[in-house]
Image (cartoon, rainbow, N blue to C red; front, side, top):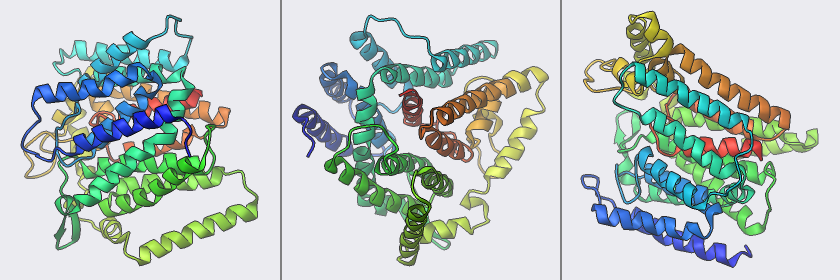
Length: 422
């Protein structure tokens, strides 16, 4: 069993708060402001005595809130609120030591400076993109010199993943409905985003079980991660997000390829995994995802290509200055507006790289790609497993913009960057 009784008591306390968070199931309404303020204070106060839990707790609550079928609940659903909370928490708990020189911090600050410049020259009224990157920076700073914070995240984040999956299955009648082409998804929050969020937790658990993290291990935590593997893959296959399925599959292949096992043992492990997946397919777990992978119509998601084509046609009609520097935060939504026939509102480009091209131009997208490349290269040189999480994220970025349209993935990026420096 886990021997840190103080930590277990705190986790039990936060499980009670999570049950309160999950109790709000009224999509049309938002909890009264005083209740939301009290709820946030109840989350933050215990963390002042145990600041190493802050990244885990904030990420877990953001994760669960992001995957609910209600748009708003007791926990903040916008990056600005989490940013303000993180700034206040960091100011109260910060150490007086100066920050050590760090290339990751330098690169993020450079990117923040660039996108602020782009927003200023475009007279942008929306600075949510800037806020998101600042949030990534601050949570990274909270993590990077705190090995305990990283260890707690690795050990206990799967608990949040399990809770989200149980919530999903408990509300499955509200989030899935039958159509002529099979099961369809009816989340208020994007079901594809939910799937990649759960997929991230799945990969964390698989890396832990495969001993790819340098953290303390015990049977209770191992059981928690094993349970998360089972329930997460069941949820992902039921949600049937093709992007998440492909990203998770690629990450699994990379993990098996990176295992330091004898060829015979590795071969047996891979064959066992294939047999298990075959059994799950035979039992119908992947029926919906197989249906969606074989669909060609617009409603199945292949409309992304039309969105990209129309979006780039419009974007290249701008002057060279806009093409190089972009139109500022969330300009991507305007560029892709009405890209699908019959759709009259703002439309996401469904690709993080293309989103950054439209928002920050080809220069901004290049800086973003260069930053990711440097982190992957550093991970490979250090011979850690962070590059697997980065590649998983890149594949997710190809079909969704989780940094720009989610409160949770910026927290994931902060964790990945911190883990890369551990």
